[in-house]
Length: 257
Ligand SMILES: *[C@@H]1O[C@H](CO)[C@@H](O)[C@H](O)[C@H]1NC(C)=O
Ligand SMILES: *[C@@H]1O[C@H](CO)[C@@H](O)[C@H](O)[C@H]1NC(C)=O
Ligand SMILES: *[C@@H]1O[C@H](CO)[C@@H](O)[C@H](O)[C@H]1NC(C)=O
Ligand SMILES: *[C@@H]1O[C@H](CO)[C@@H](O)[C@H](O)[C@H]1NC(C)=O
Ligand SMILES: *[C@@H]1O[C@H](CO)[C@@H](O)[C@H](O)[C@H]1NC(C)=O
Ligand SMILES: *[C@@H]1O[C@H](CO)[C@@H](O)[C@H](O)[C@H]1NC(C)=O
Image (cartoon, rainbow, N blue to C red):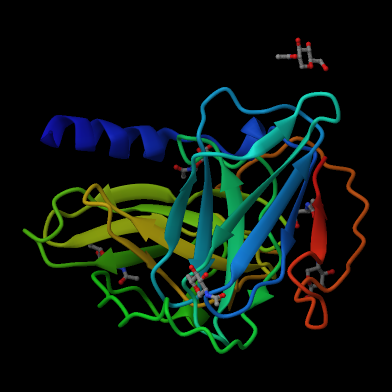
């Protein structure tokens, strides 16, 4: 049991940057409190490792990994859709990524989406206490180390950290070392000026997220740590994605490629 959990953690850690993207376009709907969330995807091809999982990262909160056991994929039109409920309160903001069964992204991260009000309170639960202590989010800087601390014994395997850049890639944050006394060292491999949110996950299934932040640095910052992605000559339609007026069917396109 322990060995397989460790192997799984290692597998997640090894995940290369998002070169594994499978869909050309993924669109995410707006969502109301406790309401349903629609994801449409098209182009490219279905990943070989199914089921699809939807990773939802509310800021400064507890991320969700929702396994999508059934979805429709039309092989003729090369498009598909999933619908799921999100147990998030009005006012929460999040990003989402459609992943394969290993948690590798199948496309780009959504834009920041704000949960709209509704009268449905059935999904609301007490927040989960944090397990990891991270630096103040105003201090993250391009290719600069940062430390995560935790209680030894509660955490045996350092957490895997994945960075999500809204409307851009998600990728693993380099884990550089662990001092063994409840501190692990990482390297902020997000480009300066970009907004990002971090998701920490560990071998017990625990998840924690940071607030959204802007990566500090300037043009003299080291670029050695930045992950390389295939060139993406993408038509940036710079549409706002928190479609306040739309119903659930209003989808916002995040083009890929
Ligand atoms: C309220 O939300 C829950 C879960 O999010 C959902 O199952 C239920 O159908 C919703 N109720 C209404 C009336 O929409
Ligand atoms: C799906 O479509 C692709 C190409 O469009 C084709 O190669 C493949 O055989 C099709 N698969 C099925 C199960 O129809
Ligand atoms: C992602 O961010 C990089 C670095 O800023 C940029 O060059 C690239 O065009 C972005 N990709 C998309 C799809 O916006
Ligand atoms: C991070 O932890 C290491 C020990 O593992 C320590 O030497 C270093 O000063 C710490 N860095 C910061 C920024 O706190
Ligand atoms: C780096 O930034 C400084 C000031 O922000 C600017 O003067 C300089 O031209 C920039 N260098 C490059 C190579 O972009
Ligand atoms: C960070 O990770 C990337 C790929 O994930 C790798 O190419 C790079 O060498 C790593 N950098 C360091 C300093 O470990």
